[in-house]
Image (cartoon, rainbow, N blue to C red):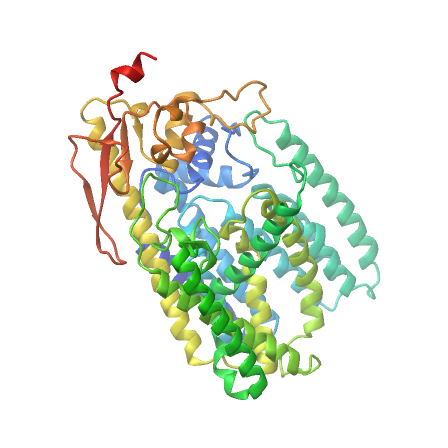
Length: 581
């Protein structure tokens, strides 16, 4: 039908815009990107031998993403770029599926395009889509499950409804092997959808059998993964819990909420223009809260403890796009584009939009419904239990460690859907022009930031090559976290992680980093005993290291400062008095 063809065309356009944005960023560098060096090695071994071999770093099962990448290796030959290219179709399919789901939820054509591009041009999604990380593949499985559940809700045939639910469960069982959190689709989303369809004959018994079969399949896959050598299955309960840890967990959850608001800000910003509709008391409350936060920010700036208390709040991907000066992958501090005052201002904008939406929720009747919008109750039944379960599985991370921003990728589509539904029900059927402006700025920043990240990595490859020309072995060079991971695997076969249990006694304590001063110890160095660094690639000259004969490597970026350079230093000479101890 014309409307369906129009929706399909718009979805394909959104996917193509996303793909073009990824390719424009020039995501080419023959080294690792975040953790994907480990997964690339597994894909390379599979393409060569047909065996799925882990190397001591993957906590994700990887599953079907390995033979999928191996196909690209067979077609184009082995390179990091060829393997990363396998993520591009998955990213396009994810954006297309989100657009289709938005349309099926009754979101208008214009708003559905804005929602799909909010994902596709996100500074969280775009860098991951240019990598071989498993986050995008896991998101694709979740979105496919959602779409199939929507098809089950829309059909009028009882038999076809059961068939769609079976497709959702079976594809999610297979798809979840890439990233275990995606199994919440078959374990939670499919039963939630079946409950909405419980009055149809045969749905509940079929859903029960599907859940039992899915649960048994998931347990079998987890059991297999735990038996694999050099795999790192994560434990939910990792030790005793203290009051301080609970406080840390609540703080991490709050930062996760704010970060989720940030990555959906192109839609959330649509609540800012409604300030003229709010009551005087509501405006006063919001103004007082923002003023208090602004004053607190000034105090924390003076104490030097504000960096991770303003946007992007969580680390790992967004903060590396010229936002955080210290990101841990190399020694020293990297140049930043968004200064602390700019980040404070954007943080206050995000919080202001959240507060205005909260005031709207308190004053608008929930039963109000605009034309062509599905029941909010139906949407919440499909999305709510999954979202709650997803957050529950984030709790151990928040309790024992930190929540990374990329963990929010699985929640981002549902936040987009909910925001668009609420906007159409309560405010207007069309998002305001400010949404297009915000989306454009976010997209341009994501493209430029991704480009600059890969430009830095190309400079790191050039720096290491410059050292190796002199005959220095790669195991004598510290190129940074995502360079050294590959070096360690190539030299020793696995990462020296204390969590390794299979094979027994594989982990060995590495004391080599202790030979350097604290400021010159890379956190990842203890995982790489095969590397005995004599030369170091660093963001800035380190006083605890000596100058080398190699000149800095300069590279250009699309975000200011546009001219950047990285440095090559060497291990300082050990004093004779210290050497004789």
